[in-house]
Image (cartoon, rainbow, N blue to C red; front, side, top):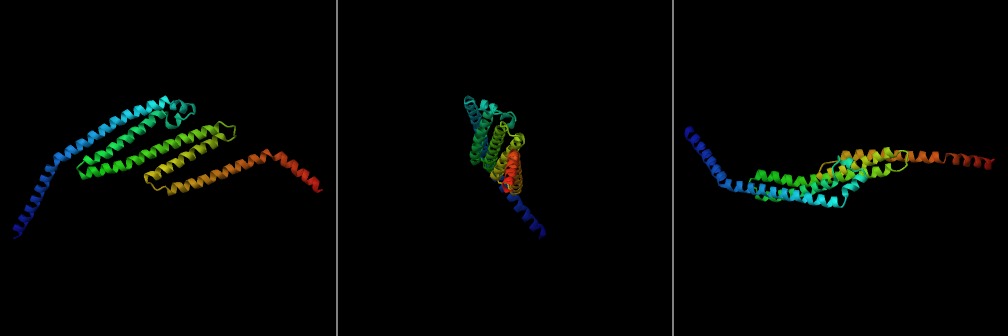
Length: 228
């Protein structure tokens, strides 16, 4: 009896295995064709993105964007990369992401499709975060350079703080866009910003006090004479 039950169980398992095998082989051509179509579509997207990058790069060069960035000493803030090339790269990867998103329709395997859907969901957010951080770095360096061009006594220190603040805010924006909880970072920023404002107020107050020190002394002496 036990042998009969064991044979029956093994027979069921064997039949299930054969059925799964037949289904896999039946779907295999469709799966292979789907993956091949997806790969081909991604390659087409990469080629289109590559040529789009060249067009955007040349257009921005014609508008003398790189010369403007060099005049304002912005190249160092992004590692010496040309702004035209960087903008072209952003456009290139945006196009590739679009084609990757479309290629998921051809993939028959659920696991691969789930992975590609996750990539196409996260990739645009990561690209947007990279653009925001890059803009923050450029804006921070631009404001810093403008402030350091003044005659203020603490221009280098304040310029550096301003640049760091702008970049930090942009990083927070990019992290929030990606979906990362930034409560702790925001709290740290508010505390640091409050200390920075207080420091500026003290510096400004001391500067005014020193500037009008002689006038204040004369006013107090005249006031005392009038009282007497």
